[in-house]
Image (cartoon, rainbow, N blue to C red; front, top):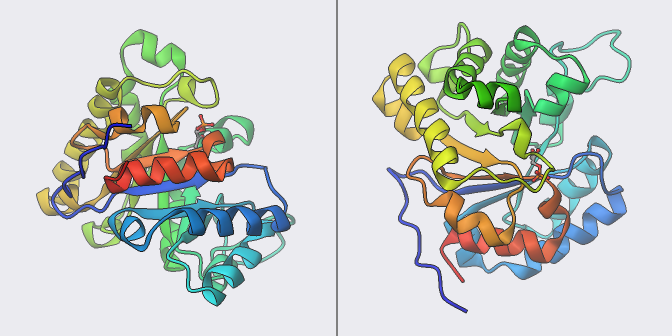
Length: 269
Ligand SMILES: O=C(CO)COP(=O)(O)O
């Protein structure tokens, strides 16, 4: 098998591969998957690329215990959080609760939350702020549907979503942010964006961040691509100079496949 050449770090941005498990895996299955993943990756690979799993809420405590107990170099985050800090919000989970589980990341604005749960840009912005209040890193998802892509307004759509989600924040507040470009038409469809499609929008998002928060902040923020990422298409997607990693759905449920994606991001074979 051809070896992939190590990917040079882009202006210090460490590649990030995050696995969004969505509504899959019990806490017991989660433990098995994280153990297998940790076993499949070398220290050097986990050093070269940051690997994060994003399990359902019910598995977070188990993942925390495993990661802390075995000192695994695998990060974890939650798939959502409440815009509120506490109160009578049945079914919601607060940023404080996630911070208490030592979560580093939380997804905000995933298209499934936007479309299936009616989260508009104002809710997404409120959730970004809630995450920041609790010291969590928002992994902010933006992306266009097929109609917008066909109309050719995908870049403006995504930069608008970015602007609205970050309304009122300072450069300091967004410094640790991670952005994920997830075209809705590529999620769970097997239809992956081309490397050029991914780079076009990721590049535009970075330019927008640089314009709003200064070139240094723009250059530091990691921007991921998500949508039907598999081991076989990772190298192509990550080739774009502004694509710093991947937000992986279905393929993150298979430890072997996900580990291979992580190895590719780490520059291994
Ligand atoms: O929505 C996604 C990750 O958040 C992408 O899902 P798939 O990789 O299954 O297309």
